[in-house]
Image (cartoon, rainbow, N blue to C red):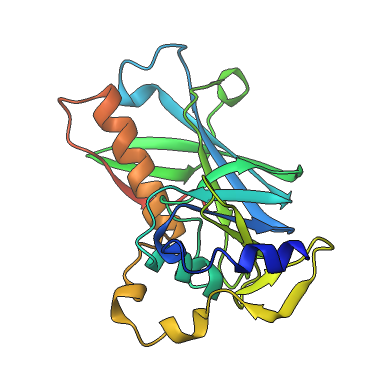
Length: 227
């Protein structure tokens, strides 16, 4: 009996639509990393943030994991409905390769409760230090996964984005439809998942940094985004 047929015997034992899952993209996926640069090793005041370093590249063989899956998150990944970026409910597990092919540096200005992440660099730019706590962004817009692993913490059932079981050779067994993702399109509950844009990701990142380092100050508003 093939591994796909063995897996199909598990079909009625669990609600695989709502269990933790993994999703695999062979790639390339567009990758962006943003890191703030400071004039002092310890960040004690907003004005010490003087620059931002941006790296872009391509990720290959990326595996993401969703621990809290209502079914909507699984439907989102199978259907390629993520929005622009990897949503917060997907965590990177591993990737085969990450090629960085571009790097840019900008100045940062903080004034009147606003922050500009694409300001002109000042004369001390070469002496700035990375603050840490960088923002990683994987662009998943219009991306369809190579396969998904249902019940990632248990039976680990491998299916393609159409719901067919994947056999031991990595091919879809079109005689074994394990999950009919197409049938979920009309279920409103299966459309209730969070998405994330570049702007939203940067807003959340800066807000978290401000609350951690400057809890007594109002969170700044980004007037110009890094990317």
